[in-house]
Length: 98
Figure (cartoon, rainbow, N blue to C red):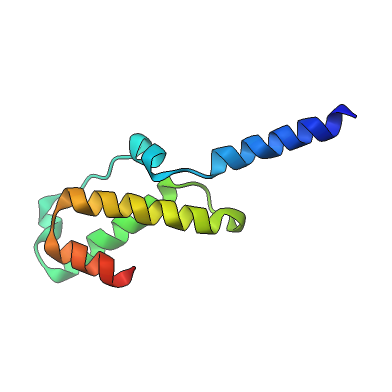
């Protein structure tokens, strides 16, 4: 009889560990960039791609069961990083892709 309780507790713990919030992800992960990555449109696009990939990785493992939560977390985390960078071209690219 104790097996179902342990199994549920483990499942709940696993779900809690997989679903990250942007605030938790931001505490764990910093995004570093070089100002040279803002020099032209091609560089800004590469920077944006790198930033969005890192945000997705920071928000949990690839698991289709948590994809919507992971995408929401990654978007909010990327929004935070882009606001901190403060580049208009990067922001325009990001919000046009969202």
